Image (cartoon, rainbow, N blue to C red; front, top):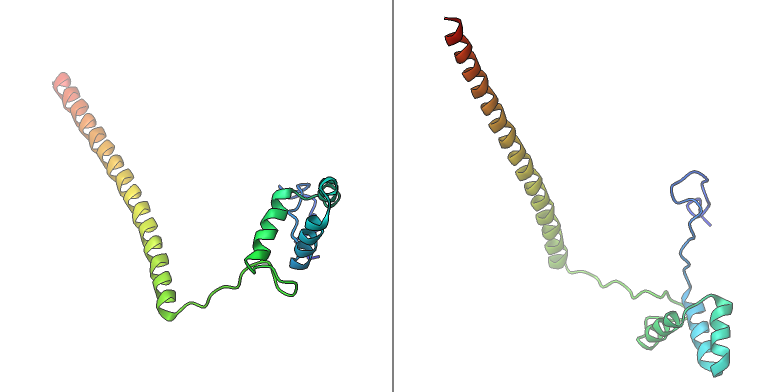
Amino acid sequence: MTSHDLPSGDGPRTGRPKRRTFSAAYKLRMVEEYDAAEHGEKGALLRREGLYESSVQLWRRQRDAGELTAAGTSRPAKKEKTPEQAELEELRKEKARLERQNAAMARKLKQTEAALDIMGKGIALLETMSESADTENS
């Protein structure tokens, strides 16, 4: 158990239940027990373990696909990327970053143009008021 798993006492998520994780060996054992159980005993097994039938079905598909092994993890191994794929991924990330930056700058430009337009209208109004005050005083 890490310090992250311990309740801190004053966080916004204090008291919320933690998501359970299951080892590959546990998943395999549960699939085998579920498959070996008779029709009336399957529900009792699920209730005892606090599982859903959909979880067992998913684990069965993972087992059949070779994603679950007793010694390994339940996640498939990551494939090694070629240098070209890695470079392409980096370029995509850079493109996305630049597009976000461009959109933010476009919003700021639009806001600045609106502010300048309002300032120009304010100055024009002040000039009009000044001219009308000068003609009334003369």
